[in-house]
Image (cartoon, rainbow, N blue to C red):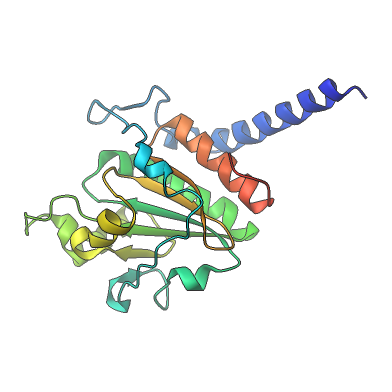
Length: 212
């Protein structure tokens, strides 16, 4: 078979796979025009500083045991060696994060059998407002239950980890970590195109292919 025909078949098969994933849960995917329709705000654009983290080892977080949910013990970077891991920084007051929650839950369900580890870390945005639910672990736990998140979730108290070690400034931030503990892919915000991007990156990582 001619080479161009082989390439065309591979591309078509990949497109059908992604289409099938979204069609299995169409009501839970936001519009693909890059806007948060709940708030009328665009999804955050990529930041050049984010790209600087790609290829570097993921920073340890060492979050205390009392700030973990859906796991019998704390999880840190050293525990992830040999696994492909999707790390998501989010906050409960972020409409983009809430819109991404059904997708994250679905993604965890679909890819867990293939060995993907998913970890969510709630990192508050407004640290000066002590009454803000994002700053209260009890309220964060309730959000986790309300959003139906069944994978491990931790609390980045005071937002130090996200802001200092991961250059955090936009929510949600999704970081894909390879089996050697290095960052393969990083993206911020949430919309249909970003869902497709992270799906492609996860598939490539699990198949041991270079993530572009």
